[in-house]
Length: 205
Image (cartoon, rainbow, N blue to C red; front, side, top):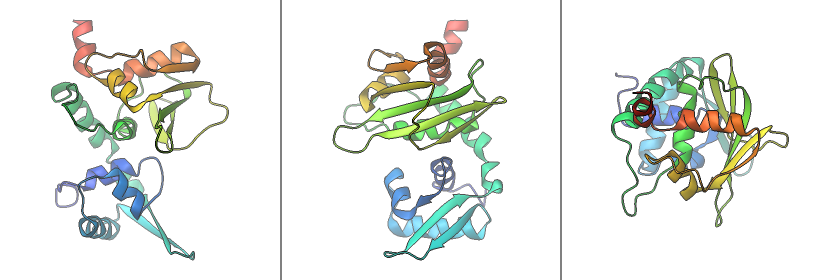
């Protein structure tokens, strides 16, 4: 708990699961953390062997942070917390509440791959006033990895606005706003795997 028991450490691990990020990118994915809090926490995580810090000779200076294997072994912990939150605390958004779909998707590597999911599925969160967010989800040997990158040859792509993704992953699982290109069956397997756990359990019961 000395290493991971504060408010931010596991969230930083979650947000680096897709690959290295710069300081400013982590600030964007972690609303609520101050510049000094983030700087202090990153320094501590590097010292604790959870992150590596890579400096590049660029102007302006560029520094990337990346997970170590020690940190990657925490992914099942993040997955367990995500599962618990999905089962016991997941509700429709309150008025004015922002939902970070990327945070949900970056929790995937801590979960077991949905049964029947294979290969690569590209997920696109369209943003009319900003760049789209793209996630490549790969299922292999029962494990899932997520890379935040666009693919030109993904066999399956699921896309939608942030509001459409929030609706699809919410308690009502309203997928009408999502568009699927490619393997419909694989898309449904992945979306079913992302569905709220309590809804799936109720369906089984």
